[in-house]
Amino acid sequence: MSLELYNTRSRKKEPFTPLDPEQVRVYVCGPTVYDFAHIGNARPVIVFDLLYRLLRHIYGETHVKYVRNITDVDDKINARAAHEGISIGEVTERTTKQFHDDIAALGALPPGIEPRATEHIPQMRALIDKLVANGHAYAAEDHVLFHVPSMAGYGKLSGRSVDEMQAGARVEVAPYKKDPMDFVLWKPSSEGEPAWDSPAGIAVPGRPGWHIECSAMSAEHLGKTFDIHGGGIDLVFPHHENEIAQSTCAHGTQFMAQVWMHNGYLQVEGEKMSKSLGNFITIHDLLQDWPGEAVRLAMLTTHYRQPFNWTEAGVREAKRTLDHWYELTDGVETGCMLCADVLQALEDDLNTPKALAAVHELRREAANGEKAAAARLKACGQFLGLLSKTTEEWSAWRPASVKVDAQRVEQLIDARAAARIARNFAEADRIRDELVAMGIAIKDGPEGTTWEVAR
Ligand SMILES: [Zn+2]
Image (tube, rainbow, N blue to C red):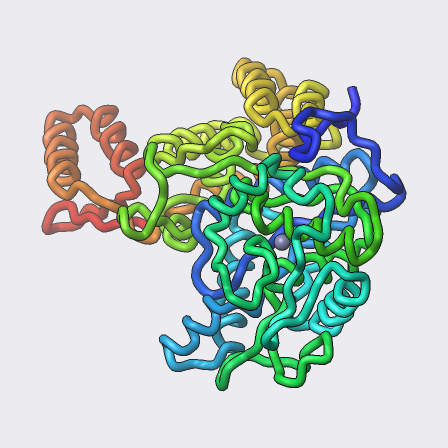
């Protein structure tokens, strides 16, 4: 079997053939760095990390170029800096560092190139000038706008009609727009906002719109056309539709990316995640309570195109599964024995539920004492970005804030004391083990037994 990927553009699963197998080129929209990343941001990071690992396996580690950008110019960043009374640079530096720490804990490999928008302003200006020159964009009141009716086939990716797009985009109908669908490529900056020399002969300094950033950065690092463009399903319209419009019209190409891949929505305990519902979870907070690999495994249990329902029960189950895998692979050498079933499942449009079923089969065999299965279990786990620690490191992990049921701990300590008085040492040991499993350390002294939360 060879690699097949679902293409949002064609709405079907297609065999994947790279434009150049010597250099497979992938672009994924990265974060806008103004605040801690939330678990919705974690999903594309994990999904496309797995794709990156798979492509490296198929085409060779040095034959895959993975670009994931950092959007470090955006009105949300300006607002955050003003709110905190710090510089824009401080906000973007701090948030970029937080993002890197968070996603490293989720087992994501760093992309080959991580371009920053602010380092590609000349490329954006050049792209905008090209669009103006070939009649796809125009300057008006110090803005530059892309003229949507100038492009045949706008809306093809999302498959929406112009009416639907107008409704969906809630387009701000500024008086200077020739058409309500026209979108901003460049806008003037007010005092205190980041500003650069403007394109299109505009005299006042300005800053780029969000969409042009990705067109400029992908062209700079991957070329006018490339293989795969990824992101969350919420980016299909308008962001990706606009990227296609800008890139194909500026370069005169038939397509921007061959394959468009989108991960599904994320919910929390069956509800939409939002700050107003009070169920907004940052990756940073989550990593205080759960190891990153448990978060990663929990997400991989659902196919990337399906909506994913984040639940506490799900991550707890993932943690337990990993406890067992780590126990079975303690001290095992992996060699390079990937399981064909796991690989085949991933080559089938990243079918992680199927891949995990194959890993569970290896777990069953390993539990029955089959040494080769334990080695395969480790190799496959690592391929999925899991089992990257030693069993000892894994067992030593503790949540930052252990939620302890103190009453239950006291009951167990009393029961253990009673067992010891009755000289039932097996029972006393069993209770001690139970306490240890709860993350409790106990200490026997002349005053009796004391306890504390183990770290
Ligand atoms: Zn983008």
